[in-house]
Image 1: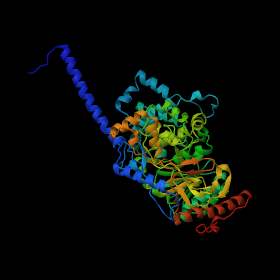
Image 2 (image 1 turned 180 degrees about the vertical axis):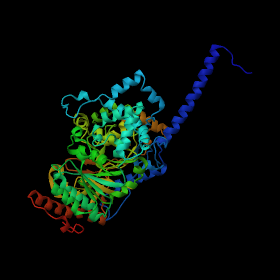
Image 3 (image 1 turned 60 degrees about the horizontal axis):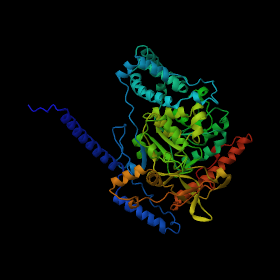
Image 4 (image 1 turned 90 degrees about the vertical axis):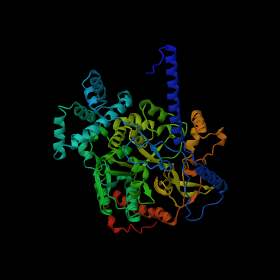
Length: 598
């Protein structure tokens, strides 16, 4: 038998050689991973060069009805199918930014046994500690809420939810009987008891007329659109819904949520139900306990999505309008792969560190998305536009309920809405809290409207968003020239400009030397001057609501007719809204919504 010499020096030498071999293998794997991550293709670089040349030579408006494909980004997101359920197309990175989460390990028998130890009792005591009661006022006392502890509690809740839900499903009878049986089970199963108490601590508002979230989850079915509106948004809502029904012929059911009759009057509710088919009006406070949430303004949006009966839900702002049937988004490859689809906001107000620093303070574990985001690289203050949001509630329930938590009364007042502008960032950050996958459509918000009189290469108007093929899909901000500046003249819709999406990656090179060296090494280049970079993103004139620096596209005739036709619908909506303000009761069935003109 061959045996090694017993010399300590020789043994140490053998160990060193083994360590070098292991390290070499590891570095080789890392190189392969990096090569997959930064997968530049020569063909795409040539396309980018051609696009740059086109923009340099572009000195006149495009021809009527022309449609040129928006250039796609060449970078690849490392996708591992084992990280979450769902089939991810290999080329999805060309059209979407996909957040690949870290797996939260499933709850095991060892976890249950740990609850009986001293460490387990300490953990339970920490995570079950209530931050505040429904009637408490935390103004001036932000220290009562600890987002790091909240994130830990929500991740454990997710693991428990996935563990307990199959137990609940195995029980027989209607929901109230199964909930009763589950509470009996909790007497002998410590993990079930921990789950029930943790759910009440984190999300007490979901237990309104029910004992667990499972009975709410069991009501979800089908697909549909969700809107939120009070009396002040009524005219916008009428126009948006009639745009879907009378012009785009969209037939999916619609649920309109409000916060009680003082929010949306009974006469306006009746008008909405009478004006077209498939509309249900819902008071969200009858579904969820508002004594905790104390809803107001933007915060109703995720709670309406949660309270809706749709399994696959698309939230649409009251002043958002489509150029295609929004139902196509339920077939979007990013949505199908992850169960959640978001849209980027404009690139505005760079060098703001407050948002990313706050997120890093309570989320040591993040998906693949934040490090490469504009927000984390200080390129913009806003990452997400929440005018349209899609979530599959069957598969991404822990993510949605986490979003709602960020919009709870004191969480939003003391943190979320102070750090960010309203609800927008709470969607993707809520998913980060519990490590759920999501996809962003890879085009930053552009502009739709009319040309600037003093600059024919600048498009002014509302915020445009594109589909995954680069075509105009929807816009947010209504029909006015610049409502934020008080310019309430209706737009003359004729042109659009993409917000781009390439600058995000070029700026990573210039700001992050380690990333630059990594990319140059991977591509076997000697200098950053050898890199072929994408065209610069267009830039916003925020005060004028104009976008310049990109290629001006002309809307097709159909798109022009749709967009400008919505102004005729809006005129009817405003006239009827004024009549209601005077106490009159206009009849929406008397209007010819299909042919309404300005």
